[in-house]
Length: 322
Image (tube, rainbow, N blue to C red):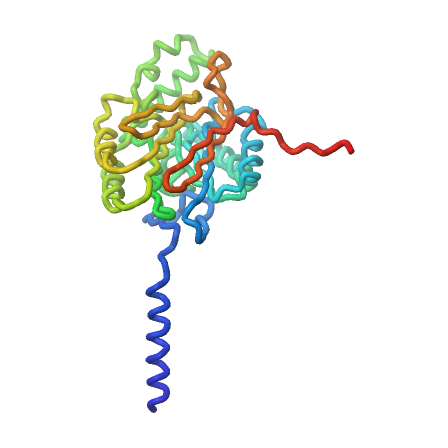
C-alpha cells in the first residue's frame, strides 16, 4: 500500500511545483458577453517586446480597394495584432438586413488579415439604438479592455448615450445627411445635428466611466496604457467625464488614438501623446494636406515607438526584367 501513496504524493508535489512556476497567460481578457470583440486571441510568446498595427476610418464614402491594400501591407509587416478606431461600415440605419449586408462585406474582407483584429465602434457603426443592440449581439461589448504583456488597452465607445438621446441624435443626423446629399432642401450648417456637440466629440456614459476607472485602478503596475476611441472626446473642454478618466491616468504613461476627423494630427497633452488618425479608405477633403490613407505601426518596448505609414508611400517589390 505504501508504494501507491508515495507515488501519488510525488505526482502532486511535482506537478504542483511545475504549475505554480508557470507564468500567467500573456493575453488577458474577461467579459460577461458571450461574443468577443476580436477575431482571435493574441498568441503567447516569450519576448516581452511586440508590435501591432492600427487602421483608421473606412467610411463617409469608402473608396474602393484602399482597405484591401492596407490589409496586404499589414500582412507583409506581420504585426502580432491589429486595432481600429471605428467607422468600419457606412451604417446609419435601423434596418437589420442592411446591417447584415454591410457587416458581412466588411468581415469577408477582414478574413484576409493574418493577425487578430480588435473592433472599436464609430458613429457609422453605432449611430442608433438598433445598431448598438446589433453590435452587442454579433460582435460583443461596445467598450472593453484587455492586457497583453503587461500593457493595458482601453477600447472606448464614444457613441455611449442614453437611449432617448441616441434616438434624437440619430433622427437629427438622418435629416442632416439628406440635406447634405441634396435629397431635401436646407443648409447643413443650419441643422440641429451640425450644432450638437456629440457630432464632433462624442461622449461616454457614467457606467462606461466607472468601468474604466475600475479597470485602471485594478491595473496600476502596467508598463503602458493605450486608449482607443473613434471621436476625440478629449477635445471637448466641457466633458467632465473624460476629465475624470484623465485624472485616473495622471500617474502613468499612456497614449491616445482616435479617428473621425479624417485629418491627421498629434498633440502633446499632460506630457502624453494624443493622435488623430487620418483614413484607411474613408472620404477625403482634397484641400487638406493632413488627409491621406495610412496605417500606424506601434513597436512596444520599454515605451511605444510609433510610425505612421502612408499607403501611397509603400512600394511593393517589383519583378526584375532580367
